Image (cartoon, rainbow, N blue to C red):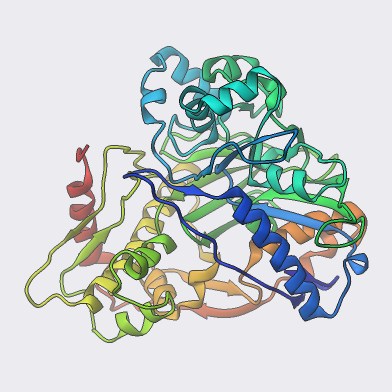
Length: 479
């Protein structure tokens, strides 16, 4: 996406890439395919805007955070498919960690011990892929999240860097020091030399190669994990401000300022962002593993819809869910439950149930899972949300957003630019290269495009919630 200095979208291009599912619980991406797709969409967006790469002030990168890539520093070739954040194959590695070390890991990183995060994915690659362990021994292997992989490929000098928001999601960075932690590296068996250098979220890391898709040397000046970028894109800059992003998964973040708030209710304590030399900002996060990807599942695995956008009209064709509830715990349950033993359930089926009821139950599941996270966040902070700021692809689904307002019984507000992840990355880059002098300049750019008000007559927050809790119970202890 290309933005101007007013935060307006000038042009965009997008391309879906392949989801690789080799075994139950395994989710992979082809890192080379991602790099090729990135080059294609850069070219496509520049063409649509009738711009050359030389006319850009800077580049910001945002990415799905915990997805882990390993590649050869000499050849630039990936040594294996990227292991995606949803992948659960490394659970056995985590189960073998002694209890006394688990508490240390959680205290230092703010994260529970879960296969969601990058460290155990790296350990699995080292232990199970001879090509990776051999490359490590010879000093050729490089690990990174997708941001590091893209910077390495885009940059003139193949710089190996990441930012604090991505590093905070590996289980290897200490939240207080903002550096790789030697104790954590030892626990997971990962050499620091194979990891990227940790930088702030907004600074000039490198310049692009003139041989690359931009055909020019342009500063790479912003890196943010997708949810952190959305927090910045929604301009939730102050303590107590919150946003919820609806993407492949759902992620609610609450800015806690410069204070590290250690969760007691199953939320993640995470780094929000660090803008250049300014102090790091922290956040509480509630993560839901499967929301938009549940719609993809209806489309790709079940064939109930031909395109993701069809779910809204299909769900609207029935007045309610017909008693059907769907908990898409495909990779276990994330916040606030953190149950890796859970698996997905479709309950309440009768002969009268149709694919329209399943479609409606899928949208309701997105909203009920979000409710669970918001209630945990309110319990943690003692602050009740007065309205919810939302962004991401599913917010284009008006029925889903109305359900969300009904279930939460508060207003739901969507900004003009729903793709706030990309906007946040642009803000980070623009601040670093001087397009904007400070975040104060950005605050006037936020504009609302649509607001959904709760229906006080809705049964969703009463009967619906009771049934949802019963459905959650059915998912537990499956493994």
